[in-house]
Length: 58
Image (tube, rainbow, N blue to C red; front, side):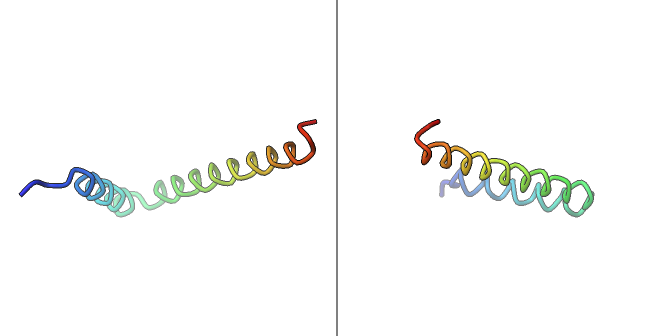
C-alpha cells in the first residue's frame, strides 16, 4: 500500500507545529503574529492596487 506523499507532508508539518507550540509557546505566538501581519499587509496592498485601478491608474 503506497503512502500518499501529500498526506505524509501534512502530517510532518502538523507534528512540527505542535512541537513548536509545546516547546516554545511564546515563539509560536510570534510566528502567528508575523503571519497575520503579512496577510494584513498583502490585503492592504491589494486594496491600494484596486483603488488605483478604479481611479484609472492615475
